[in-house]
Image 1 (cartoon, rainbow, N blue to C red):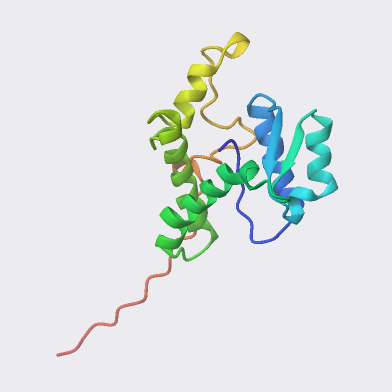
Image 2 (image 1 turned 30 degrees about the vertical axis):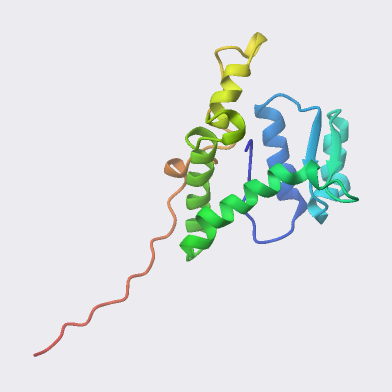
Length: 167
């Protein structure tokens, strides 16, 4: 996963911001696979892809295979992290999701990648001017976005006050 945001709205600007980060940090892809959710079919989102010269492939019309990888990613995130934790608030969710994505990108072996993690495969494939300069963390514009340990602290959970027991 190249970039992500957590939001409790369907605001297109959040999705465009994540797309801008991915396009800034990584090479421009030839094609972008997405689903048909309103943030991804908006003129702002599709216009950004088109202006960058990226072809758009959307799930639907019998083309389930176009989007199978991203659907599997979201299923794994929900099944392995979000559904298990029952986060109390957005801060906890953001921290947990960031840790899971970091593991997914750098530590989790992927069968389709011969048991290697995506970032290791990407680093090995980098050639030309980027060789030896793989980007592991977001630039200063997005500090700590993919690193749960660098995230700003969440407000602490309020612990119930214990009243002394009198015997």
